[in-house]
Image 1 (cartoon, rainbow, N blue to C red):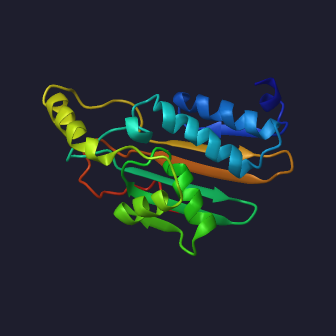
Image 2 (cartoon, rainbow, N blue to C red):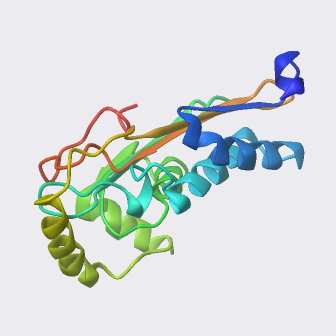
Length: 189
């Protein structure tokens, strides 16, 4: 935008063109007076919901077993707080789970079933994981005839508020056909 070109604040920036839905939402939040942390969470949630590149959120790329395992992290420059989740299944917004780790625990990372249990205990939106078997079968049938997935495998969003406070977040389904339990660099703080 013209505002960003002149260097005025606030600013939101994301990786890849499909991240624009996230920066648009983050800017909306910042202009309404939200903190950059809130703006980042809401912006990344918008990308997770839409999965515009097929690589973020539950619409992302399944692992070798046919399941989507999600990773996310969030960081708050004002407090130097950070939280992350990895190998998370069935949670609609892993960025929100990462924020709850940061704010509601003494830990910085939760993984796998423990991360899912924690997210559920915080009331985060979930899908019925019993449907994963059908997802797996559909993925295996598709994988036998499909070419290698294209595009990128993550979204990162940074938000800088008018007062100079900075926050960032990242969310991904990781690389397609990864071994179950594989964690890439996206949620590593």
